[in-house]
Amino acid sequence: MTVKVVDSIKFLISEYERLQKKQKKQNLSKSEIQTLKSLESFLGKR
Image (cartoon, rainbow, N blue to C red):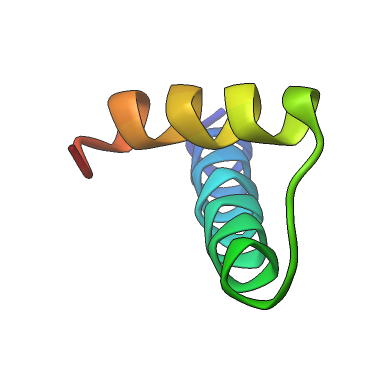
C-alpha cells in the first residue's frame, strides 16, 4: 500500500512539473490550467 501511495505522489509531482514547463513554453488548455491549479493547491505550492 505504501508503494502505491509513493508512486501516486511521484506521478502528481511529475505532472505538476510537466505542466509548469509547458506553461512557460506555450499556452495551456483550460483543463490543463485547472489541473495545474489543483496540483498547486494539493502540493502546497501556492
